Image (cartoon, rainbow, N blue to C red; front, top):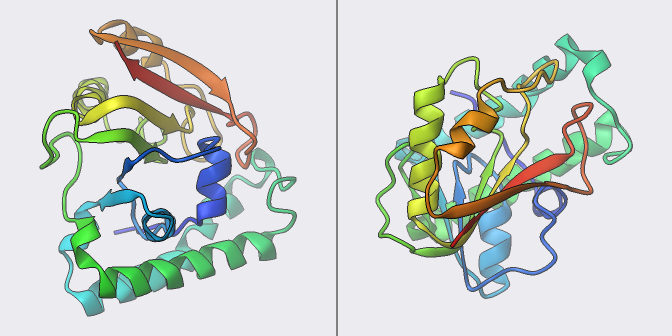
Length: 216
């Protein structure tokens, strides 16, 4: 199980978060520090991930082991990544280490913010969150999760959102190929408008857009 740790600064850039609404869901959050940082700012922030069903000691071990493991994808596809946002591999590693530490601290003192759940079924009521974020799951792993899974996952994210869903990135992991079924499944969603929007973050070459879905 890979439980990636990403920092609040990375979330701000990936999702172009200029301000936060009253309630936010991060799904699937892994070892990200976003929920801890958002909660510290007074936001009703909840993280969901299947990894949270692990015993505390096992979760700590899994998060720590995932830190070097994520570098393997970058090493395998070196020509598909750029460093202008991070500045250097060392700076990226520092973001991830600090995020893991903040996550592990928060999950130990506020476990109620971390719900063991995953797509395409979430244990939240309709329109529960003003903003729903999804980082590096949908579309990133389209070679593992098929079109029908993505459609069901999108509908579930929309169901628990009262306003907006933001998803990043919109390309496959690794070399960053486009997702062939992305346009057609968006056309199947009812009661929404959507757009792709440039964000001030790029690590994979060309992965500098998020999908913004708004309930109508």
